[in-house]
Length: 449
Image 1 (cartoon, rainbow, N blue to C red):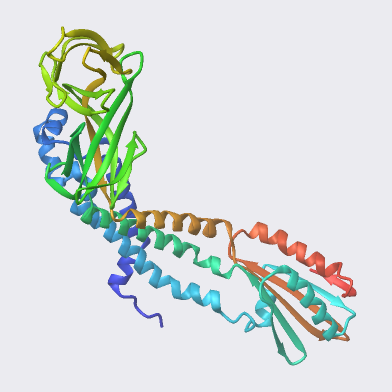
Image 2: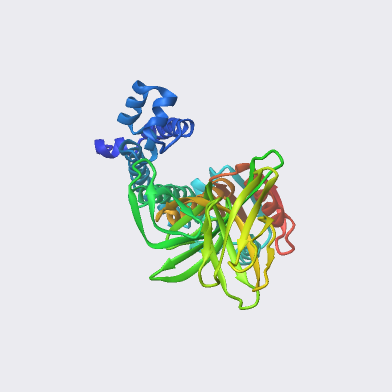
């Protein structure tokens, strides 16, 4: 009598549940791709109207991948995979470790791939010859005897039956990484002006400030443009400052982020300021100083007793800018000259010679992500590739050879089976049978299918 299955176990192990959760997750992923995520509420009102925006808020569509219902679907599918695995894995494991010598002759006669031979050799010589052939097939050779009959067995790829469960494990790892990232991670942004540092990132959606535990300083920002005037490349020279010390510096561009203590900083945007960054150096004394100045404002360098300012600006983002500089040491007539951002200018005065370089000041816009579950996702993706490779391209092949003395001759029954790729196994089986037919150690007297 068949034992009734527990209702909960039957529900969570059902294929229908798997199909349902996969379908809903697929639809949700499409919606999350079409509808931009983590935007300000005003964006959704402008794009979709107040009524639809209200529905989005109820369903957590603007932050769908962190919503309670999306995470619940992941948990439900995870339970489905876990219960399915515990339901079916014991049976598969028994197939992997089973005693294949405990197989009756009647069952061997029913195998789909089989050939029989009659040989003139006595049983002992036939067994020795068959051992040599099966050793070349691969796998560990097993042997058992039942009276005057001998059964030899070998197999390849028994462990490949577990490939589908490696895929199950990989999906669970990916889901675990997604949930860990959702609970303990965040995404946000920060705008850092050149020459300044920030220790906070502002979370998407809530704009909540999050203390990073260290500071990131923007030492320099550069942007280049196409002939059309569109931005071509953003580059930020960043330095991580922790406990008052510079611990890491890197120049980042789009798709080449900075990673530090589980946080990843991506180059995302920039913002120009109506200010200039000016670096001034005395060529004689080697004294240097960096200044932030606004156009048409006089800026002093008290240590050197000089002052300077920008009195005119010409150009555009497309063609580049040049700046008319006013410079005075307070002793001689002030000098004026044009300077560009791509080369330093020399200022020669009776008192000293100065080198001046300048550029427009920018703030770098960084997108910041913390995802402690990302390594689980990487491990899951790797396991999934390996599991799919095993599940689809490798098979469990089993070969039995039954040798018995019958009517004054030795009969050899060769048979085998494979759980996948039956056509490929058929070719391998025919090649193995040919080795029996052409073996120098076996003398065939009759062959029949």
